[in-house]
Amino acid sequence: MNLSRLLYFPNTTSYSSLLLSSISNTRFTTPSTTKPLLIFTPTLESHIQASVFCSRYYRLSLRVRSGGHDFEGLSYQSPAHQPFIVLDLTNFRSVTVDIELGTAWVQAGATIGDLYYHIASNSSTFGFPAGTCSTVGVGGHISGGGVGTLVRKYGLAADNVLDVRFVDVHGRILDKDTMGEDLFWAVRGGGAASFGVVASWKLRLVPVPQTVTRFSISKTSFNGSIDLIDKWQHIAHNLTEDLFIEMVIQTLMNGSKGIEVLFNGLFLGNSSGLLQVMGQKFPELGVGVKDCEEMSWVQSVMSYAFFPIDSPLEILLDRTLQQRGMFKGKSDYAVNPIPRGAIKNLWNSLMEVDAAAISFEPYGGKMAEIPESQLPFPHRKGSLFNILYLVGWSSDNSTGTKASANAIGWIRRLYKNMAPYVSMYPRAAYLNYKDLDLGGRINQSYFMAEVWGRKYFKSNFRRLALVKGEVDPDNFFGNEQSIPPLLV
Image (tube, rainbow, N blue to C red; front, side):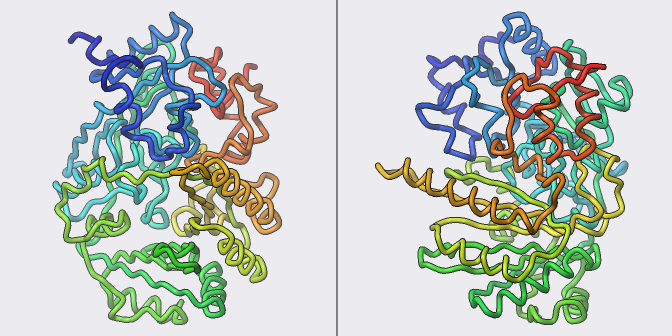
């Protein structure tokens, strides 16, 4: 193949459309955003090897993009204005499912939707514990952990990785056996882009019942909602691992001023089983027969992705349905229930902005059984739930810059005000909700990087840095929040 056909320079006709094709956060599509010197779209593993060789030879930074959903855009832009190229894995999207073995090989440029589509096309009794947004690339999602609706039953996406095809800084293609235990540990939840390029993952599929049950309850009354929110945070992590109830407090989406709290539930069983559990554990929410919708597991995937559940399965393959907008995100972990007064403050804070949401994802179940050191992702026993703060804004007019400053200022104040009520020493964060406010710059020393590294990885950060020192001591695979090499 003529590799020039896979190279896109700024003067190439389709350069801009390719660059923008998978960017979710349009905050990083402005004229001031640093653009790549070129984009390379490999179709073979040997092409990935060539990109590593050439980038090293010409001393160019290489950024790997599998989906473009990363919150700070580090896979396709450089906040430090460093010259770089993008290795875009958009052509690496094949999925091979083996139902007899209960496994799947998925290339890193495939989306979660691609993976779910191929699983469901082959079986109605297998699933995979990954996220809910169908257009997210599996490369980054799995390498950062990967949390979804099956997390309480089966753990993270990264917990269910069996093998990997990986290109290291020397251009070697490695797998689980040839890369060694430490590197295989590091790429599953430690951010694989710090160590090399994942070409594909081998995954363990998980059993799901023929029938699952979904419900979604919305409340807008301030007084009644506070009681339900308080009850949720005391029980959600202790429910049967077959039940996942996500809670979202958000501004109303219909253009009117107000706040609603949503309780989105998935039960791995039929509605009678769900109603029995809810009647015993959370009767205050008032889930009844009319609120329950029985469906297949893949239909629940569509439901969480905001698709009609009677949509054709192929909708999961449609990358043009990706949601786009300008936003800023931050994350926390709760190790104790949040006081009612702080919950009221969250509710009142949301009244100050036009478009924001605070999502609460329950842990417990399988997550509480896995040791913190088993993978780099350490947020296990004792983490009741993850909190994601999101704020969005529009820049379609001359007030865009002011809107950006106001929104980002708001979320930073909210995050500061939540400090007394969440995890401490360190105040933990989730790598896949990347946040440059925590710190980070190119070629940062290990000791400086500890400031943000321990938030993502706790005590696992040191082991990650030691692995980095072994496999990439010159920090070729470096970005603003890549693991720094620790040499001993």
